[in-house]
Length: 287
Ligand code: ADP
Image (cartoon, rainbow, N blue to C red; front, side):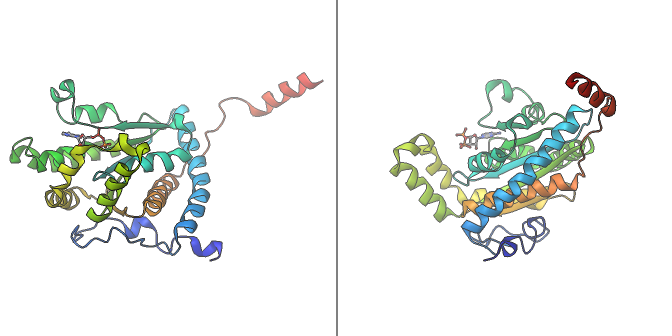
């Protein structure tokens, strides 16, 4: 397959965007929409895009250092083994770590519980010029919390609108939000869990509680459907990423990130000193 053929036929911003009428039921987690190539093609193309991503990230960082206020926030959600950690390693791993602000959200601590659920989220927002990555997010407060009835239904029920309004405020302040749901099939999840048990180097990743959560699969899918129905907005849409093929999920998220950065029309900040005068000073030192 020629290099040209390995590019996207249709961009993930189109094919993966959750629009009205999207259903989790019947979603093909093993599909590779819009990308005509195979895993090898995907990996080669990702390397290519990585260079673009790295340049754009540096421009965003430079903008932040020069008084700009814009930032990007990548929100990752997905069932256990869906590959959230791999996205952080392989996609964000392609850019300068000093430009990335990574936060994972686990079971809230006592201190976090004593505050509003958005308190810890707000504190982790990326600063100017940074790419923030949330491994789990405020959406847990309408996912695990809903599935396990951790608060009353009217409490979590009010959160969808509250989250939309909160995200809109962040967008108005200059943060682009990219929300990616990594959709793994229950069959592939079982394979990945079994593999963790088979490999001593993966035992640390195995959590017996993951099997208990798996028993709530249908309730989780209903909760995801509600998130997609209520929180895939015009300004902060959800992207449903087929994640049975890790290479595809990584490629798709890289593309969404690169597309978002491209859309920001980033430029290198102009020098706040006289470039010719500085060149003359250096030239003088050569004499
Ligand atoms: P991971 O499973 O992502 O590797 P952890 O083992 O730290 O990371 O698991 C995080 C756990 O925290 C998940 O089971 C998740 O459902 C839970 N969690 C995250 N946010 C909340 C929340 N707001 N309320 C309750 N549980 C939460």
